[in-house]
Image (cartoon, rainbow, N blue to C red; front, side, top):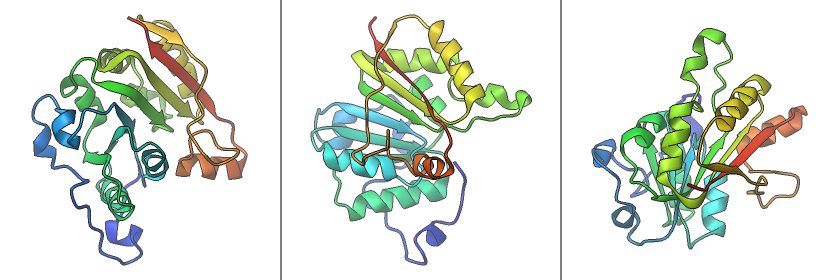
Length: 215
């Protein structure tokens, strides 16, 4: 995600993250979600939370679930956490960190119910393709972290990246293709992110993939 000034995003208002934005030092080992949220509800992760539009709606509509947003851009992580705090959402936490590292080393096996990856950076130049998130190691880390029956959901507007995603998923063991679930409450939207709304206005097509862990 693009970076920016938290104060600018808040239109000059000081942003407060409360207990929503976690200290990066708090994830030195395997994350304990029951301790993090104070309950044992199922957990969903969104990678690349941006301004928090998707999680804001989904967490409010699903108080029986817990949500962790992971965002690399500090300004957006702070802004999203402030939005969740102002909305009074007790079932959301934010981390400003590298999602790849979280999935490699900080998630217990079968600890997640869903992983949401919406409009990830496509790194369009060939020499940068290795930086793309959806690679075989990430997909295997996600499978390991998901419960049996848990889902990995990906949406992109970049056709070239989607072709790579399809190839990676086709060669990954332990998954079954499932229909793309509709995550947005607003008519005409699939997942309800800021990028989706922007691209709908521009007439861009979207490409989606949904997989369920079966082994």
